[in-house]
Image 1 (cartoon, one colour):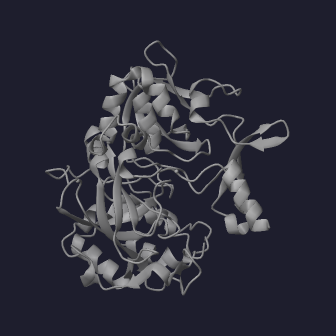
Image 2: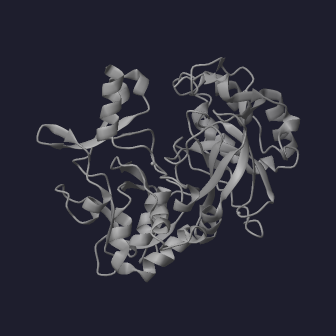
Image 3: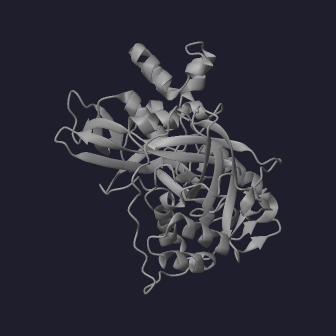
Amino acid sequence: MRCLSLLAVCFLAGCQTLAPKIDEVSHEPAPVAAPAQAEPPAPSPAPTPAPAPVTEIAPQAPAPEIKTMPVAMDWLKPGAWTELPGWKSDDLKAAWPAWLQSCSVMQRQSAWRDVCAGAVRMTSPEPEQIRAYFQRRFTPYQIQQAEGGAEGLVTGYYEPLLRGSRSLTPKYRYPVRAPPDDLLVVDLGDLYPELKTLRLRGRLDGNKVVPYFTRGDIEAGRTPAPGREIAWVDDPVELFFLQVQGSGRIQLDNGDQMRVGYADHNGYPYRSIGKWLVERGELTLDKASMQGIKDWAREHPDRLPELLATNPSYVFFRELPNQDGGPLGALGVPITPERSIAVDPRATPLGAPVWLATTRPNSSEALNRLVLAQDTGGAIKGNVRADLFWGFGDDAGRLAGAMKQKGRMWLLLPRDYPLTSGGGRNGL
């Protein structure tokens, strides 16, 4: 009865796992946001972005240790470095700053402390030195699907730029909202350890907890809580896709840029507006991309509220410091263009190095490289599943929007990493 009651609570009032940085609508044929109520290459390669600044690691004053979560062997197949496509040819130096970013957090776990300390001691290493470091200290494990097989889906995301203002004006009238005061978030793990990754979202109606308001309610102004707008933008379609990506920048008229990132959401699963348009014959499947949806919306402004309301999920934001580098990922460090991925943390430990073998957007050209599992997303579910961060701006957006490739993944774990022989999805 207890399990049945918990499932009923999640179904009626909304449970979700982690912040839903949702995929582009075209990336998933089914709804692609975090569960709620308790979610090819371009013809020529994109320019290599400058590496994100590295968070300083201070070994002389270590942070308190965090217990290392054992990884189940159920979906891991021990491999050899020679099995990794392109392992000898990748410029590992391009991934090194991202690995040090991971270590700034991972050093607090006993299983990662020694390998991270070894990385910090390496001053400006060359690719061959980095390759030798990983081969000496790590073991590659090919990640398998739960149902069998080693091939999965690789999509992409990016950081968009919008135009806006910190105040409401006739030009800037679509609000970027912070979490409202009446949004309740209950961590179910406080009551039931087996549900430690689930959170309940809702609101009080008298003495009852009920689901929070839908996107349609929020955008129509039917919510009783006062607004908590942190900015206003000029385009409701771009605002919608800002919510899809989960983070972005807003160009202000005074020349400044405001950075915003995911803060919370209303507890409903994302529903694909692209799928809705296809089902009604408004778009063909090949046109149901981010750009195709934007074009349709601008040709049918009178139907835009109807379209957007078909997705009940609504994302709230917070202003972030205007620092260099990419937006903050779920690991809490800036993510690096073309070297950071979002993963399902039930299958791949956050912060871990991963060898990704896929192809560039809309292409058969190989894209094999070392990446870091530094983010999560509501649409990123499954063992062999990755969302590659392409960077900031329109060029990155075009690559991300076209990325829907098959791929394989190898998890690189320290040689003494604790492994278990079972227990479901990594013991969770």
